[in-house]
Length: 178
Image (cartoon, rainbow, N blue to C red; front, top):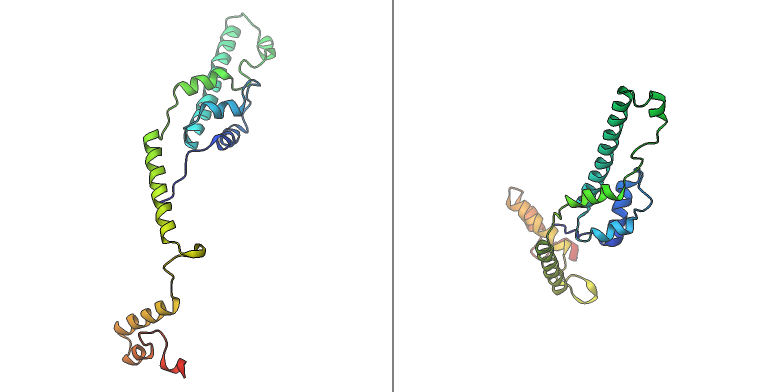
């Protein structure tokens, strides 16, 4: 089990930057402000907010382009005049983010976060109790004893009795002590 806590402010800023790196953003939008209003959101939640904001901008741009073409077809604008008009939605704006945030939900509630934090605290306490002096585990792994045990098990499962006698219970054969 691996517990990854919710992102802190700096992590949320990084998540916004990564998600929006190729998207034009209005100058009045800062990653810091976005991070501030998304405290308690997971990385996936923030990604969804960014995707919705971008889709909102695209939807608005398509609607504006359809209106532009309607005006050309109605004779209100020539095609050249329509083509000369600036892009109606050149970037993701505050309104796009506000609409996206209005539909955003935290996927991890405070109760779940508290449960994970309590679990993490218990595990850390257990690990601390298992540690001996110097940070080493109180229960050391004896590789020689493990190898001897494996040799005895192998001998019991069909190997010759000589092999079983070759590795005594202490893990050192008679020939090694001479």
